[in-house]
Image 1 (cartoon, rainbow, N blue to C red):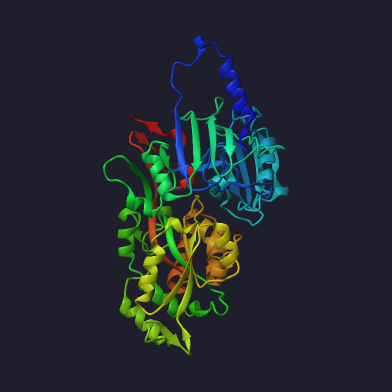
Image 2: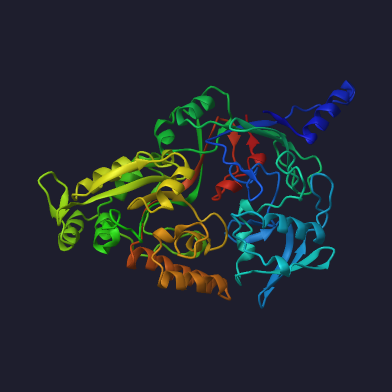
Length: 513
């Protein structure tokens, strides 16, 4: 069912009532962006409508990331953190799209509304919110985190004015208003004429949900869409070289990595031997993968976070070289002998592993699973490759249940908290259920210490140590590639890129043709 909001009906009525003499003399600018799927949820306990990709810019978070991956002012103009207490000055002159002022009362109400969401990772102490003035509040972290503000740079923390009809008429402080939403088909937003900040260049944006890679590319070439917002390796391989499609890219930010089931129970217990994990790490020809995938724009990875990010440095972990001799020697040492069929055996058992590919979906990394299968076959490892397109199936059927040996994931540290990915994905404290692939022990200890460290330098050093333990010591995760964010467009369009996929602000796209 097509949803037409109150804001859209008002806009249409006003334009129909406007005398021709007063009609605008300029043409409306519009942009149509093809994205892979509709990932929105309007459930009260998992409300991601217009904030999960595609981020429709209806609502805004309290702060935004700057070019150096630090939080910078947005709805907060200033903040400090002393002895566990955050004191915040709110941006003055801001209003929600319905005219309600952004002030201490509405800020507290919006944060409490956000806290109902089960995906909450801000972990704010709801009882601690205090109004200090019309535009000043204070609060605490319920886990004593010194990095709450950094986490607020995630688009998922965008704030809505509480209302009874948030799913039909979401009210935020952002530069756009919801015009219409057709689930699984498209969502259209129009420029908020009363936006408090820098006005966007684009008057109307439509995000079309097109799951098939080939259909998205054809839609761009046929002029049905202006931009493709989710670009897979297969699309990069088929991209025409005649200038009819323009590539936009960020610095390398996303990682492709293999994560092992560290709590495996038979039959998913073979990779519990660190020698098996190391052998697989040395069997990966990253240079070949980088050359084939994403049109050669990915980089062989030694670590999870790129070296430029948070000034981590490329040497904060050693990673693994491509060394088949060493890989074979490790499996020999572990007691796995080569069988007549080319698959190693031990105590009557085949060296067969189940690999689930991939989060968020296998099309984001294909043909990596097939190439890894061949690389592992070269050292006598048989791979059962299960390819998943739905992240719900990935989690429910294979991840939470531990029904696999290896999980191929493609993700990034997508906010300015250096501990964000570490804590949520690589520790047994993970609120997202990643205990199955986490080594625990010193990784948990280092991650916990980094969350409460007193200075950013101390935070980053602890994060370095934790990733070194994950990769070099425990080998619970094997980095494979680091990859930029990509956008494709027709000629004459300049997309304002960001390392954060959700902060690619299509509303500030410029048109040169």
